[in-house]
Length: 381
Image 1 (cartoon, rainbow, N blue to C red):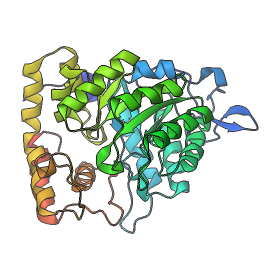
Image 2 (cartoon, rainbow, N blue to C red):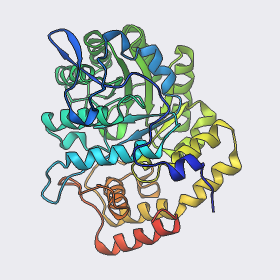
Image 3 (cartoon, one colour):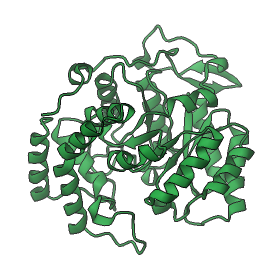
Image 4 (tube, helix red, strand yellow):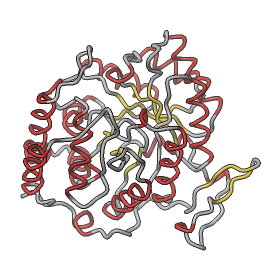
């Protein structure tokens, strides 16, 4: 059985993380930064000045690691379980003491497209408050249009986000000029850093390396990282080389399996949903890749093979209605059933995974029974 660092096995619910920055997150009020009034922050929360905000150059350094994308829990009727979300974030923070990582709420795993504006703001605010400076928080704030993206990104900055993750404009696929202008206008409207989420499966667009370099040039130092979701290694290699020229870190958006192949090609970090219920796995893999410990990498991936195979089977048993082929298909579980499986794992462990919001859904009872045995095999249940 694989052994994990003691700090990850035993970290308590209220343990503090390693990133030491001023506690308390700001909101902007009449041009000044003040502490959000919230009893959960305690009476000793300090005022945070504008000069304390994480600068884009600082955020770049924080992205050469793993990013935990958080799930958004809903009850059976589809209502947002905000207190459950807060409990989940506290649990993750308690399990990741002395670990360098970043958080991204309201991304794809957070079902941002199913959230109202008020709900999205509430989830971002809850994450920032609960993390409370222990780790950088980079909410997903991309929308289909530039105006909406700017508005929600400005709100994220006002409540203390360290950066924003911006998926490419979707539904109406822009021209190259439109794509460049989208990010340029955003960079002019906010002071915090931007992570470009280059996701062709969900946006139906992909920014080529030469266009990405143009975006970086016009955004005046605001682009801090690229979350790259191309499934083609040669295209990933081209993007990685282009970003190395610009000094911009690139993260593997497909998680641990793909990162194992992509880190030798230049990936600086990766994005993982496993932080929601099994943070030991992505953290151990991150450490193994930093040490170029290929035996450990193979051991970790072999350990997770039953889970990955299960996701592939469930995805094949519940085919989606999309007309575009997604990277990997059922082999790598790239269908949307994977989100419901993650929530089912959380629920089995006593966390607040909740339900998917319709039209997405989770596993049936037979599948849940099989999943439960897999979690037992991983010694986390």
